[in-house]
Image (cartoon, rainbow, N blue to C red; front, side):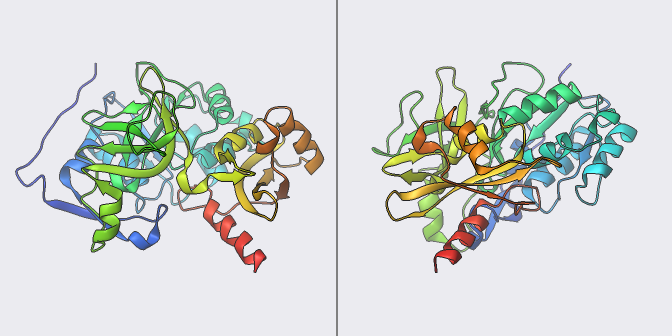
Amino acid sequence: MHDICFFLPRFAWWPRRASRTKVRNPRRGIIPECHPQIFYSHMYKCERGNESILGVLPFFHVYGMTAVMNLSIMEGYKMILLPKFDVETTLKTIEKQRPTLFPGAPTIYIALLNHPNLKKYDLSSIKICISGSAPLPVEVQEQFETVTGGKIIEGYGLTEASPVTHSNFIWDGKRIKGSIGVPWPDTEAMIVSLETGEKANINEIGEIVVRGPQVMKGYWNRPEETAATLRDGWLYTGDLGYMNEEGYFFVVDRKKDMIIASGYNVYPREVEEVLYEHPKVQEAVVIGVPDAYRGETVKAFIVLKEGEQCTEEELDQFMRSKLAAYKVPRIYEFRKELPKTAVGKILRRALVEEEKEKQK
């Protein structure tokens, strides 16, 4: 039995709070949001009952505030809160407290999967994991679902949309792995061609744009940036993606992260998905670095699983068996850890800045 209660007060369209956008562009600053933006972020069909949510995401981030705190309050769920994400503590808490819902980020699920004593913990209470903040590798999704018996639901959003616009169906309906799902109720979405600026064809890569009641009113005291991002009510996300014949959306990459190597477009996420298939790789991120001949070349930063050893030659051979030659990284750098945000999203831009400093 699915049960949703709706209540919108008269002052619903008054600004309710202000969120600071961090990941997309810190200079854009504060975004005023209205009651319906928060409200519509919790409209999606949820199963009422004796559920409990494990909260490892910080509430100062719009993802943690929405997917853990606000959702729990709205649905009457029990919140199990941890001060911060720690692998051992999280595993012990799942076994002892038996949460049924577990919102997180891909790096959180990856860290749990690679814990050496994972098999000794009972994680069977988890029914639904909601993955956000970064693309979820299909390999990670399948492994985590095998371990827990639950489902990882991938969605999509950004601070400017309070934050959710798309999701795969949670409790029923079709779910496509690797897809961010379909637009939420009362949310419109389309792909805009990068060449013409018009609506793109089915399966054509372009910019994802969205329109709906959860979209921001603008950037605080930044009218020029607001005008560039909000056009005729449409929010231009800066993310590249496509829509298939069934209306499911897929994110390819950030517009600014696309690598152009020898005139070819290389999408980091595609390369990263293959890197995650390698049995020795725990985390991976790909960027473009300056190249005098190719314009840009592909560089991969790798964190290996505990106790594993791997060479550049081994990875290169693996990647060449699965990707076109121009997509294969020319440079590999092994690290013990990668820079991350408070919610666990890998900071690709920090690595780009590191490379720029090296060029000086």
